[in-house]
Length: 319
Image 1 (cartoon, helix red, strand yellow):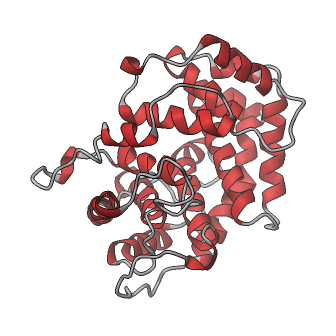
Image 2: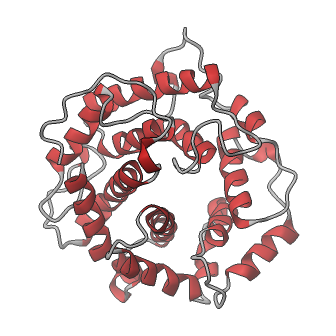
Image 3: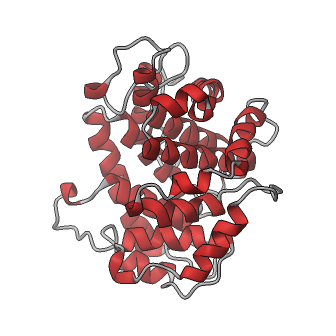
């Protein structure tokens, strides 16, 4: 997995600056580009927490700091009204520590003055994301507790009699990410509103394992990367679970020589040369997810503490 991680992080370091380049601004659609920059800031935050001495981090940090200082970026965040509130909240929450000369404090002040979206306007999953970023940004709020939001969501309400297809992978994985701080907080510990304990933790582990088996079978690279990280967040070791090891093996096998995961799935594989804009658009999401997942799995929880017992899984071929 170390080679898989090194390759994905190397590709992100080399290519993420394209998002803020003149050619990137000209050739990429605005809203996907803005979302990609927010995702890059999330990767940068995790990278700094997990491997602060990594030599690739300063270049990515430089890109994020440059964008966060741009006085024109808040207007780009608000260009698509459907996403404006959430984009602006994530922008304020993900500002690099110590960065004080950008417009993000003013954006957070505006959000606090405007108030939070009415609960009826957001799904439980969307409200959970709002709660996570509001807490990260230090905003005062009266949002529902993490437990209430989890119990209202699809993962908690997915009974044993219901088909697995009723679950949405992104809903499940992001629920897990926000409840465990992307794996930096052990499930059920270190938070006054701990949710994933006991039966709830075992329920989540079961659904995530089974979903991983399905996405590996369907060769869905992006979703598999998210589920591998979710396994880690739930205290499993994806190098030892059969589904996690198979997922990591699959990602290693499809990784390009330059480190990219060339699309969201086998059916979406990029045929273009690695230097084209179309290749970048297809590879960016899955490569970032792979970089984030492998970085946190390798470095995010010191000593592998609080792992659930799992039989070893063969991982030959995992790079």
